[in-house]
Image (cartoon, rainbow, N blue to C red; front, side):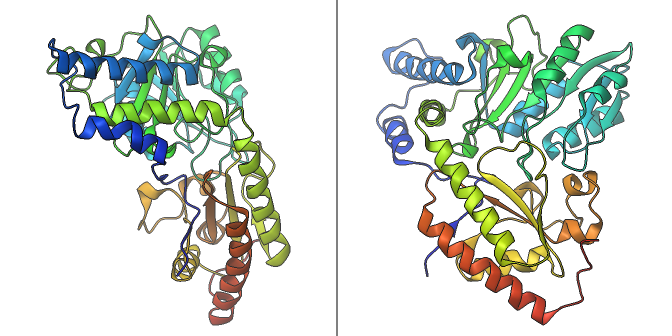
Length: 386
């Protein structure tokens, strides 16, 4: 059976260029980047080259890049590293659980936390950020692009508010990196998170951008690695892979790759809307990253459609991979005002540069057929879009 993968927001495959870059550091070059002999210094040089590549992608200094194990760790360092009991934190109701659950834990530890609402298109209103400010506000954390809908948040405007209020500002850019241009200077953020496996780098890699002069408390202790911001022996092979992926992402933002992905996403989205009755796009009225569409289908359960499509060879998602198997509907879609049945009837399609026009054609055959079949089996089980 032909397998088609359209769940890039969950993870992306390694591409050959990244594998080739990593291979020597998995076998021949095994040095510890903290060692002073030649084996260690070769590893250190490879780590610093990768740091330079990631910094170029974000338009920042090399020294402002901290290598981590992924987006979750980066988000946790950002939230736990700058605040203390009695402080106030502002975030949004549509954040990834790496931010939401960290914020909830901060609240349990005696901090005040405001979870901002979003519009029906899933956008945080900067005016709500401004209104939420308090004298003890220390940190604002609002994601750059939502992992379920792809909706891009007004991070530049929020950054201006944070600067005016002299408040730390973090943005989770896990779903934005490699898909849209990121310039930390233009955003005005103090911290920014990226996860490697969302951009064709290996799982278990990531970075936290820490603006010069931002003094964070580390989560880990046991060494002076990463300029004393993240203890632990560097994952040299993974970091090299992330650096190479950053170089490829930088090129893809300029060579028409993302335009091609956007055209495929639009053709998939419009094709499904044309072929399937009672179907709508979540977040259609807001700017979105070019690879993502989130569609709701009346009179069916999204999980059943995910399974039906998987049996036919098409991999898509009902929402965040981190909440796979959860019985609750998407917190993102509920925050956007969808009733439970509509949230449960929604699927995310997210593409990579490896997808082809032939795969879009195949999906446009598979999705309508699967929806029709499930509706015939249970025509009144899933509520309506009203």
